[in-house]
Length: 237
Image (cartoon, rainbow, N blue to C red):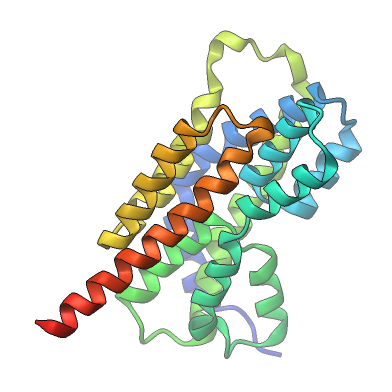
């Protein structure tokens, strides 16, 4: 049976180190909020181990606290995680030839940080083999996932003992800025991001966070149109 490439796995661990700084408070916040929402320790850890998607988990919890209908909770959480489908499609050319068990592990550990770092690394060194690429991907993802589990457990155990004045909720937007900023490399990316930011704020009055869904759909449409416009302009030049 094929085994992981140790040197690439270690490179992934090293490259992912900075993200632990923001993932730990992020996980702790989820643990605190989940216990405040009424989940017990088993439910909190089951939620975080099975779903392993911080943004979707926090979104679902917030909607549950707002007594949103179950359908709204499910649809919104799925919409927040819709980007994983795009991540997966983007990684298929790189990880597709790897053995099944490696691809299965990669599917479980597919979240923002491993995807962002791997995309950049694979673009810089496209000559890596599929096993080297999946080893790097898992080197980033597995330690970060473990940090996420431990931080969530700590947050759930500490619960309300974490004083609100600590302001640890800064970790949520910070981690997304750190992930998304290096990926803003085209006009279409920038147009999509700006559209979503403006519309999320403008539609914040809509119930149960449904403005997020509307903003995401319109931003995707705007990004696609800008991409088409750029391609047509290149074809004419």
